[in-house]
Image (cartoon, rainbow, N blue to C red):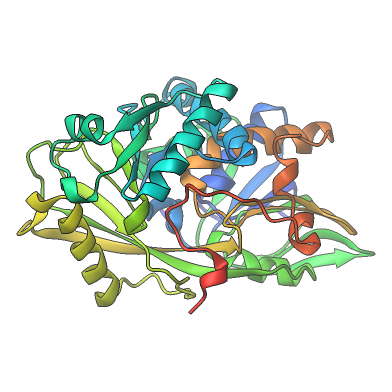
Length: 397
């Protein structure tokens, strides 16, 4: 395809690293590898940069989670978000206007109190808000669904397209080669080692293959002979016409399984989930979930009643039962690394790619990434995280 930074023509016959997928995980990790001196890197995508879930997500950013594993990774990522525009030499439109986790029940409020105490013990930026505090912060909220909440003043949101292209251009300046309209059709292996990829434009040898294929990551794993307990699922969002400002922060509504923000142009952007996993590879939006989103958001923000819909979209991801990402190498399969299982991938990419690239270059395992290794799934070591707003794999329909 013709796009800034995307190469015309065919890839070379060999590279030090081949990255499958030009979404935010693939592009950010390629950039971080090049930043650390890796010279021959190719990023391959069957469509265009950010064409999957990396350009079809809620754009929200926080690190106020409930578990040490999630807080450790996402707090590093939040730090990186504050640095990205300057480092990548492009405005990623990151707004550090705050992120509110909204509790609607006594149980959710108790969890917020517990989480806030943990945040304070770890030096994580968060404030505990009473019902009155939340309504003072966001007066447009329906009081009937507000019990209290936790807010992270340094959290917020960024524009997914700007972030994807910023990483692409920064990687290209460091020598990364990005190719689109190149479909990876298989892996080449020898003696238990992945040695390259088969593509629609011929075979490519590689010292390392990185699976950053998003909703198609399980196919790539299967080519490597890897089977993990994961599924492919679909998440959906909607965008309204521009409205007068009423929501400055990013917001996660625990009771609604919803997440939202309002753009600088005034558009309301929000997505909701049901209490089961929508196992699908389709990027087509559905009437049923559009109705679910509209009903929930009007309940939360009555002023949205009658607002016109501009567009809605769906993106596909892979996910494990605990919704935590799956990052790292697999025992007995050399030359192959994965970064998949990302439900909060846009949010976590800057931190994860920094640590993963360092781990690949130095060969030293990252203690922050270690809990998210593929091995945990085969050993049944699930990560318990209670502040998520998507359904778990245990609720499959």
